[in-house]
Amino acid sequence: MQEVVINHRTKLYIAVGADPEEARSRYWARQDAKGKVLFAPKKQALT
Image (cartoon, rainbow, N blue to C red; front, side, top):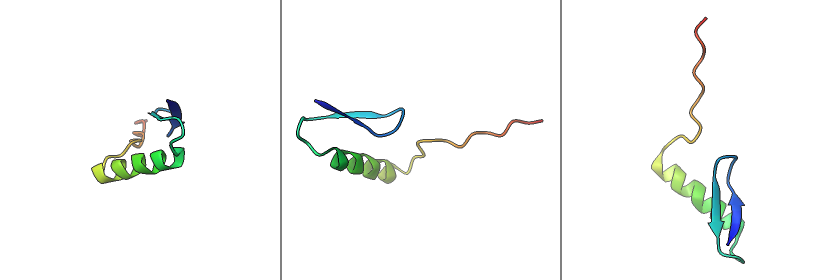
């Protein structure tokens, strides 16, 4: 298995010899289909 880093929190493991760019594009396509936000905006501190 080889590791594919998506972002600082997400890693995928794919077969040796598989295309890492294809794995990244498939990952992002699934995330877009879900409609979820991976990185929620930070809330502003009240002063």
